Image (cartoon, rainbow, N blue to C red):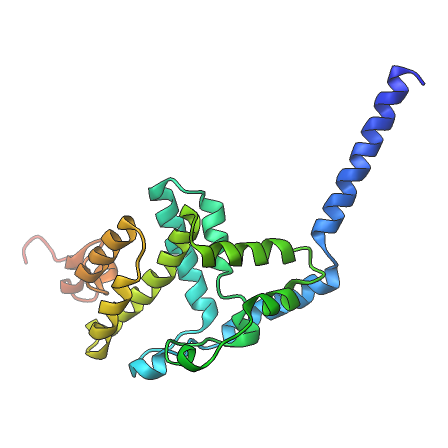
Length: 225
């Protein structure tokens, strides 16, 4: 066999190996379709703690979205792997499509098998190893990215509690005290303090131009007024 033939055979074998590995990683399309429908169930899965708070409501998909945004911001500020952090945040409650959301009162009496739920959700999709690995990393909280994701989860809750407090729910202040103590990183604690100092309407009422609200129907006053 000539060198050219050897190189051609190697290239063909390598390409086939890559194609096979990629195919295995892709998983079965029918199971991926199942998985995507299941992810949509998070839109219909309520976060159950608000029944104890007495105000507010949110589904798990809404919570996961802002948690991922917070994770993105913190990871960039802290020099962490942004993509990995965002994935940890985005999928941290995926199992709740099957299990539901257990609030802190529920957890006193109930347990659940998260890995079993994730296995059933992802088997055949090509995602099982990665999803379960992410869950284990998140629970161990030994990597910077997992600690950021844990803090992002709490900071989303802290933002909701701050909103409830500003709108007059006095229970939210008590809950805030506990949530702040659960933060793991200095950067998250700093951000939490800034959140507590910030009015929930500042982003739209004070900025970009607070005088907008005093001009009457949005019209600029004439120079003679």
